[in-house]
Length: 352
Image (cartoon, rainbow, N blue to C red; front, top):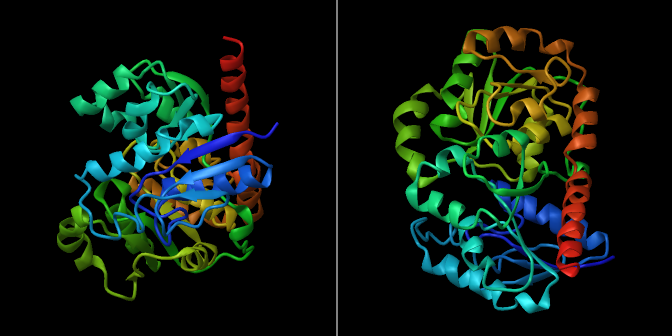
């Protein structure tokens, strides 16, 4: 049965993002697959977005790209209000805008479900965020990993866990391992860029870095990372678009992901496996749900053990990496999960 679904993205980045952007990419993939399955989808995003379905925009460009500071709240509130004022047009609103969407969720009759893309460990340490979570704890939430859900100390109304999904067809598979390591993401200390450089240097292997640098992390990059980049053994490629990202991933011997925080998912690990590239990651956050230890990569606990793990990476079958991404982390698998949740919520609403 087709539904009328509003997907509420944030106004900070376009859907899909031109380069780096996790939440926006997930919204784009979900919109694509829901539309393909016959649902009537309206995506609330910025005017430079190109999602499947209908686009509803308040702002012509992504706020981040226009230099709007992250501390701004009035623009995001305008963006979210534009969605909720039209709530009567939809069977369900799927909120990907975290707290802003929650604040409006009790003011409409239309069912609202929230996928929380952040980590609860950090959020619950901030009093105002914890207050919002506690206030709206009975509204339907979806977790993006079992680990994210387990770490929430606020007793939220989780109606399901759905892993993020990618468009597998857009990731070219390579059965041949390259001769370099790669690191991909956003340069910030907790994502393990310094540890990745250390591992590569100890192995005397080149490390290619594709990364976005937010203004808040520029000092860290300048004072801690930049001096370690020599352009030969350690190369910084800048923020990559999709083509550059897939070229980097499929040509690598392995993706290094020595995260030091409880990352709620980690899309780059699924993307690497889709290209056939093994992942060597610290077992933090959802890493152990994404990487099959010894089958699609390794989950060492220290830098020294990561060095040893990379030495064994030739024993990983790249076809197994691809197969795991296809089975568990495709946009089809993700949409299957969300359709089941939508059906339960809408059936519950009709039987009240």
